[in-house]
Figure (tube, protein in one colour):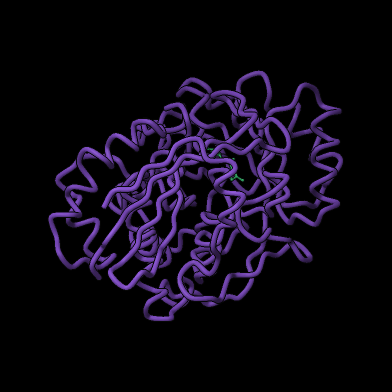
Length: 367
Ligand code: NPG
């Protein structure tokens, strides 16, 4: 495909409720959107999952925008004909930047699949037409507020609850929710908030029958996670540490993880995500699809990925209403705890352009 134009825009959407994690509180979501157009006028959309600040990952929106404009887009422009499967190879000389790279690859893939009339789900190898939904619950002001929020999600039909934890908000919070819901699939996410010395403390979570503890230690600490895995019975699941199929291979070989959270933005795109999925399937490592407070554009693509056979645990693929009063696509509405996998060509959804223009704070078109 020949690229004729790339549009970069930043939009700003308020969240329906503040979202507090061990690294900060978010009340709104700024999103860097990528739109590509080919020589026949067919467009492809993607969102870059980087946040405004480099707190979850070293990547952040202004940095991604700069990286794309200065290096990645000129790199792509040097090729006359381009296929999504070439993007990671062309961009390999530029180190890092997985989130920025993933968004360019996904937008190109969307346009390519639209022109071939194939859905992303079919292209990736999906075997399900609906996906079981979990929800990620932020750190609350107190146990009552936490219970109230969890109840609203359980009532809405969510099939798995993930609690954000940090030192000082962990054992008691988990106990409180486990006592209220003895049967519900429950897991926790620390976003790197603990240290190697916390093994004894974290093993207190073992009595609550959790599915997993996500990313308790620093993203670079594979050895620490492997040592921790020997001390706690609850399975360790890596998120931030997994940035490529190679890091997944290392983590599995070192026994630093027994479950993997696959986030396409974090690993450089959907094509790399499928490689991680395949590796995990071969090694009997369950995977699930993480979330980055995506709009409907990112969510549509995540649902296609989460429909692959190795995604055996519910992901952070929640309904639009969990995040935004108004989504930028048709809203994703949960039915009985499931979201349908889009079936249209490409990612299967488009943004509502009028609404998108209304919430756009920056826009640039690169010919
Ligand atoms: O439902 O999209 C969602 C949010 C899921 O908890 C979630 N994401 O660490 O996995 C994470 C976390 C996150 C939140 C990451 C905010 C980055 C920013």
